[in-house]
Image (cartoon, rainbow, N blue to C red; front, side, top):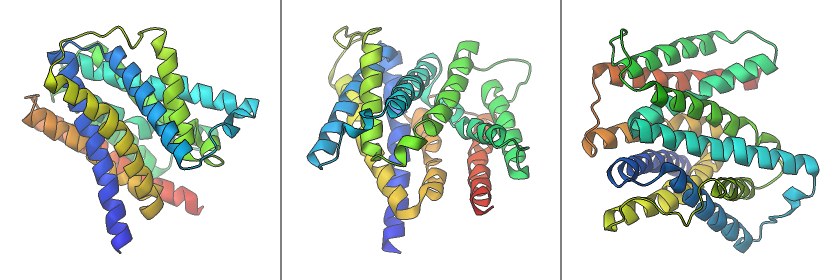
Length: 299
């Protein structure tokens, strides 16, 4: 029981750190003029390097993953299209809208995962999956229109970036599965972060610093890299080991909730009844898809 309680706390804690870090990113982008691509570069390079060094200190084999061409190809594609893709699109969605909206839209990712597995298994989506898809669409409509179906409450650019972050989140979740079955997750994610950071460095070098930097800006960036990336990652992985992946992923719903609460309370993001209802619908999709996945595993 104590281990399960610890697992619950770690999962919720990790999701909360992810949600809060999104608000620090919004603060940097919109109030300090920091370039979102530069923040992605710094986050991936630093977090990836620290993660790999920590793995090396723990005695993990960091290089056997490169021995097979197939493994190397999966790792690089995961790093560029998954790790870098989800970070870049998520931060772009925050920059053009706000952390609350961007985070909730990103949590449409499980819907795309469910659709992918239905297609790959050559089957019709399960009843729970169909209900989840309906709720996801309804929740998104409410969120991006504030309940007024005649107009968009966010820009089309923000909506596109948010949907792309959901798609890349799905790819990020599916692509490394063959590697995670045979290699330590810290090795897979560490290399994914580092490779993604190196790739985007060619587009936005880390030494091209933008924005206004003061103590609050430095503190926000430090939180994003250390707590919102490294600490959250370790806490979430630890929770998976204690309570299982399904339960941990369900508790990760705390991320959009924490992102929304902090955005409203700290950054003054307007969030009305329609937005909260849309958020509730999208969070409900995760619960439904988690239960559907349990049923698929028992088949």
